[in-house]
Image (cartoon, rainbow, N blue to C red; front, side, top):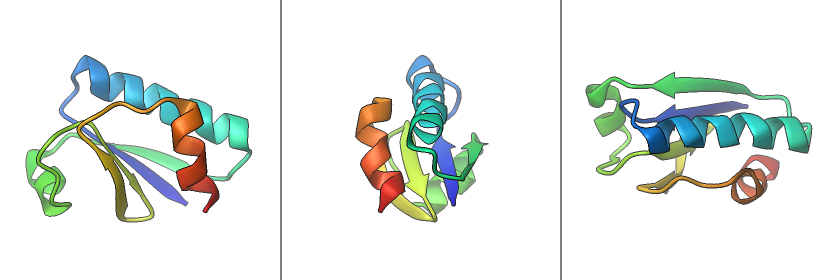
Length: 77
């Protein structure tokens, strides 16, 4: 599983990355977490607001920072 955090480096983006790491640890799912900061790559996902969370190339959240508890259902699907 590949989880991508899309964002330019704002506080919310960093928080989402930390929560994604926490969600992977808590769920026991094997996943790689990548940070995408390039605006062109972010726009390729059709995301207009960051931070955004992408799980296996599917955008599951955009424009808000999720908690680990909110992320776990997306990575357990």
